[in-house]
Length: 430
Ligand SMILES: [Cu+2]
Image 1 (cartoon, rainbow, N blue to C red):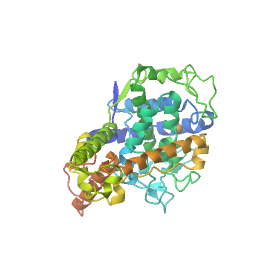
Image 2: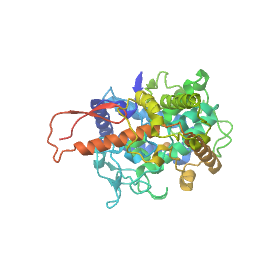
Image 3: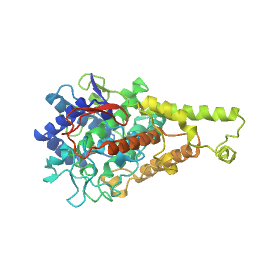
Image 4: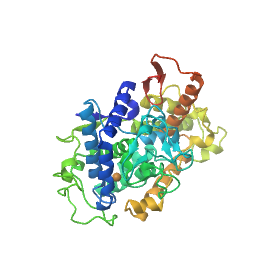
């Protein structure tokens, strides 16, 4: 059984091996083939239909098989972007040692850092790997861990989970790298040849994990599949006996259960849902304590009492969340008050909705639901999101890294660094 991990759970040796493996897939032509496969099928129903999830599950499996031909210890690891939702551009994934960040606006938005900056892509025509952050030097806000946990909990049918997975939360990660709107075509990730970008595989592995996490709740969900009346491209006769689009000899049923022969993979959890649970429990425990002390803690009335909630209210929650996410010594000093709140996820634009053959009303429904959920949680003076705690921790790490940066990097030894999320032994680049 192959175990896919959150990319930050890898040791630095494993991370290097993964990055080198993906780079080899570029050299041997696999990345270009995958990008072509995706690009040529955009009008054949791989998006905006029930096949979105199974088709992409198989696609990531093909990528994983190719990776494992190079190095049998590799797997299609994932990016739990819910942890970066507050401010995705600060993610460690988007740094030199991982997958590089923004492209160079003065040079065709070509990526200029990380090993992937050398890539020359072939689809649809020869070009550099491009990234163009939607808000200049910032990315849009993503869905946080509460939102994904709620989607999983609230979805009862295949239609619900499949629409939820494909819609806003999937789209915003793609299009955020593709300039001001989805017509820009200045970032591979936001186009139909998005498998050009190594981030694609990490992102789609995450989408696949969300589906898998939903399936794990009830055994029968490993057999659930079907059309949705909310998708104009779905037909009522869609069934799990259907062949996967443009894939030889494979049906939808062949990929519904990742644990089965032929698929044989599982996911190591990143802890983000557990962190949400812990955060909720910490909030209610603190509320209870205040009530016992005689304060009126009704929300939002509590803030009118003499003991206005201050940041120390979150100490217990921070400790509990840090434990789950393996964070060290987190404090909120680097965050201003507005950053203590859950950032509202950005909406996807009309061009993206059209490009993916999705229904605008469905997208709007999710956007409203997600905004309401975030607003409700933000009203609770005792709740602090794991994404906020993670953000605080990441900012501390960045600050620490900047402070300890030597003028010239001559150190030849590996140094131990506490990286956000997990203790990672970071090899100092020579
Ligand atoms: Cu796709």
